[in-house]
Length: 86
Image 1 (cartoon, rainbow, N blue to C red):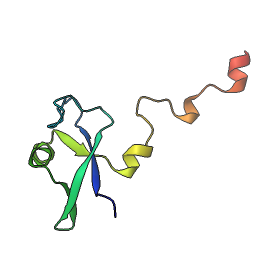
Image 2 (image 1 turned 90 degrees about the horizontal axis):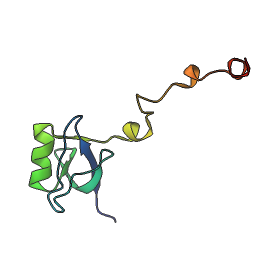
Image 3 (image 1 turned 90 degrees about the vertical axis):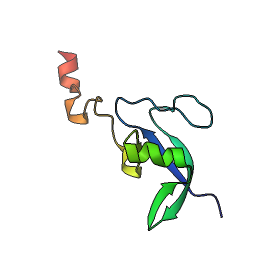
């Protein structure tokens, strides 16, 4: 069985360094080792748990990964074929 992983990304407006590489983590997040604790998935590393507790990082949910960027225009906002021809 594979290792349990959790995806964390920086909270909006925050830059967070990976405790191992010392580089800023990407805005789309990083996968880190995790474990089950009281029915909840939590990072195994103390520093990642502190980042999460302090609100510096947030857990990336499957919905976050499939969501459309808030800056992207909605499909209904796209110009129609007729408007482009005029």
